[in-house]
Length: 371
Image (cartoon, rainbow, N blue to C red):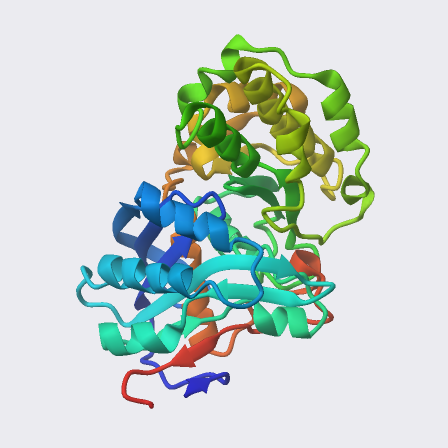
């Protein structure tokens, strides 16, 4: 059985292992963080396991499903078990699972993968289903990394506001004021999904070229963005909504149809420019201008995307590595940190990160042998 209340864990920092499989469907990231749920004391080893083309196809077919998708769930559990079993000296695991469907104002949210299964396989306590409690209490259920971003900002020694921008399948940003001690306190964080990021571009590349992504932005660099499609995108009501707000991977799926008549280069350029325009629109919601934007996720490796974003916002833009962080593992680390917060009864989201009515601790803690 799962435990929703704080569970007895040893005092002091825990060696927590987090795992993340994002909507871009590239693979599973796993990373260790030494954390007491409030502060970061260090980083441990990490590991990545890419999905095979066959696994990715099964997962893609399950996107949007509110029931069924058993083959996809089995893949999620098996690959996570494979990746997570290779770590030693772990106190606690944070397992995000795979988001299959997300409609917080409708049917809720669905993360594929059962933490009870992993608890038995790994022989370790596992915190999972991080989003459901937030959604039940009126929140968007996403994004959930902001409290970790706040801890990262304080770890870097930042004194002025900054933005963490995650470019995964969907884009999301966290505006952080590190001068505020607690992430749930007023004025500490503002977070929301910005719009489409790598998911439409990756799907386009798979369809046109049989490739998982536009590596180095090479195809987009050869093309010209279609302004009519971009104007249609920015006319969508989502961009006029005040944050917090969140998206499902498929909310901008129409972009794929919109660029279908374009050349490969122009289609890639249009979908890349869509990311930059979405981010620029999001920056308008920041309470105060950030000192800089630190980019995490796969998008930071696309120089064309990064250049377009830098040209669209009014402050320096750099990969999170510029602040001494690991952009490949930040999301996985976030769920390690959040797992410690759940185990210690600390909130994992609040009104300014997900729109939930009050600060809430999400997640279920499952222990091996609990039945």
